[in-house]
Length: 327
Image 1 (cartoon, helix red, strand yellow):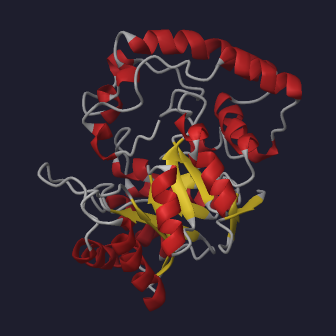
Image 2 (cartoon, rainbow, N blue to C red):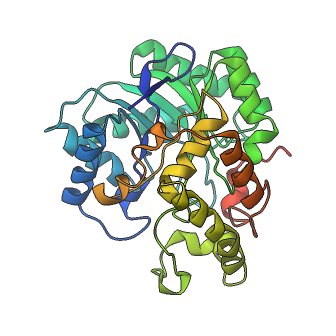
């Protein structure tokens, strides 16, 4: 697989990473053996960048990766996150006490003494950016983390943080149906030499070979809380996406592969992290870095899925509480 640089001073990593949230059962039941087969397949295909978080499970995704690392010693770059709490009174916590406590749990579950990239999962407005970066800087100086990242933040927050201490990466939802980062965040990360890490580049499974039926989803599937998956909006969205699926298949590509290739094509500092819990689904997109678009392809994709085509918001109002919205 091709590689890209994880920030101006970061390591080279695979151009496509692996999001590991689904190892904790967010999209359906799974088990340790299935997750380990997926991880094995990922490194066999050249993926070296793996993304998780302390709240996935909570802790389960990190435990899966930690157990896998005991038997597979392939050189990889790990990223995990901190800052979201399962507490309705304080759902986001960027305090030094919380971060210093939580990183110890992540290190233990991952079976390591060093995390190459440590993200703030969501920004806590009660903690000044300068104080937050100070806490993360001390973790870098102690050797516990290699660099810090920020997730779902505004370009303004990035600039404040980066001025205190250079940021390695910013993570945000970005795909053919979620394009808000184009209104400043893509540009700011490129200007500052910060990697942009799009999560959900497959639109939470919509841009894949699967034919999703929301009526058959597990009632616990968190996608059912998202307005784009409502009974009113989902059929409208699929009516737009189905012609895109037909087009990319006519070009000899998988739907997932083309969707990730589109993200890679937007800027050289993008490192998408599609998620899956099975080796079989991974095979649908793992060669996306080999897809090359012509100008005609780009024009047709833009015609089929123009900016802002999606019906419904990408999160519910509850889920949006801790996301910085800047446009």
